[in-house]
Length: 324
Image (cartoon, rainbow, N blue to C red; front, top):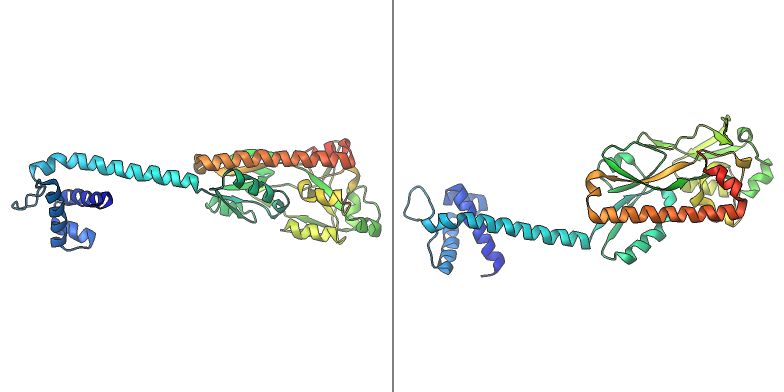
């Protein structure tokens, strides 16, 4: 008899003792009483000792059956523990990490994801877009990338750098509308920007700051986008200006001179970036490992882009844009 078959028979013995009835046990297993009796007889023949007192009414075990019953309970408990350990090991080696990120991450995170699975080839990363903190709170993802004022109950937050917003426009836009050196000028031109977020992760945009000054212009020709990708294409085409494009998202276009900084240092306040994880999932080793690694590598990428920006446009402008 295979070990797995013997375990199942011992489980049947345990259930029979607990139910106190061959008939009830048969109903529980969806089998007939004679089949249950034959299965236990097979076990008794192998052990060469009776376990069921078939003469007694009501049903009971033999003296040996009662004596070994606690040992059978312990054995089956150990068996479940063994299966749990095996399953835990399998989960670690074939882990699925569900991370929810904004569409803007396409310019930075895809390389990081592929870099990670080179180190952990048995891990699977499931990337979910766009970000919905409501869906995250319902358990649709283990980890979510958020920015700004974050209030996610029962979550662990770790920083992943700072979100720097660069006011930009295409050279063709500047040629058409002239120099945009102050936020008040935005009242005269088409402007596009993204939504601020939601009640659990909000990125405020109520005006511009520069050297501790504050300006709240009246934007008359504005379009709000839920997709930074669509906004970026509109800015790149010279259809509108952006009061604050994420640095990591526009650095390539700035380097290629397809976009240029505007507003002479006036900018949206910078915000901290975070990764948030459900507190219950934070205790899973591979989730915690990935989250710490990704946050650290993302921050390194951001620092690299900040250095490039400073080389292109100067340290003073970078430091101004970094202020909150």
